[in-house]
Amino acid sequence: MSRVPLTKEGEALIKEKLYNLKFIERPQISEAIAEARAHGDLKENAEYHAAKELQGLIEAKITEMENAIANAQVIDVKDIPETGRVIFGSTVKVYDSNNDTELTYKIVGNLESDPENGHISIETPIAKGLIGKFVDDEIKIQTPSGDLNYEVIEVKHI
Image 1 (cartoon, one colour):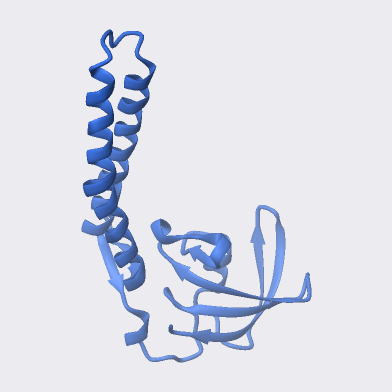
Image 2 (image 1 turned 60 degrees about the vertical axis):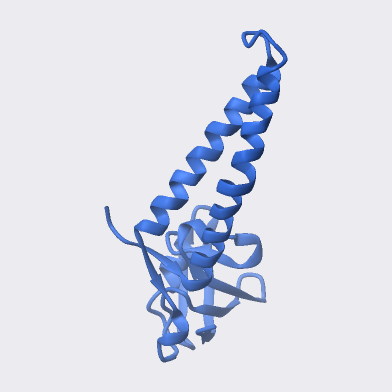
């Protein structure tokens, strides 16, 4: 399996979520299953089936996160000298000439992606279009929702 890039902050966030799933949510689900079993006939016990389904989802998440951490290549962008070039982990400020606005993105791994807060996955068209560009570069990025015209204003390693 190939190495998956992950920022230092993303690794800490995933480890925190993993801890919560394993030591808080997993025991709560086990208790809910035990309580639902105590209600009798399992064939028609909706609480039991819902708890078992939730248990399956939590176990799948735990496995996904454990695999991600095991296969992660953790990159601390603060250790890399700033050159004005966009790289994984960079925080990039761009001017969107289509909408006459400034936007800020942090390029992160898939599991730490949070578009509402400006954290975009390295796999997105926007991140792919920005990687390797320098301050003052003008770029056109093709996305499923249309073309974006950006100018790179600032690149920070924070």
